[in-house]
Image (cartoon, rainbow, N blue to C red; front, side, top):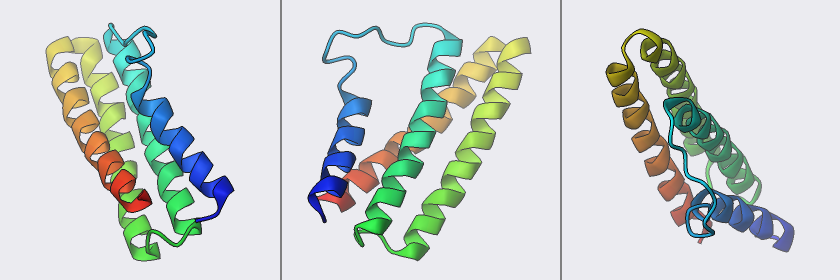
Amino acid sequence: MTLALRSLFIASMLALTSCAQLGLPTANTFQERLTAGYALNAEVRQSAATLVLAKKLTPDDAQNILDQTNTARAGLDVARNIGRSDPKAGEAKLTAVRTVLIALQSYLASKGN
């Protein structure tokens, strides 16, 4: 992996995990958590693209991750819509989608080593 790609990947992973450690505000409202979910989805996609360029992720694996992030994006949209009329159900959907995205993030981090 080139130094530039490695630096980008490390910066991406640190950005996602370090906010709480740095004392930055955490998402408290549903809307803040939803926005963080969309950001996490974008970050997973970017990390996968970086790993493909570095030849640490096969194109087939990258396509699978892309498909999963497309599904996650749709899930985030559903959570947003459900949350308007049923906040508890919207929160449950958001939590489920974020769980998937965090698992994808962990998988990509393992591929980056």
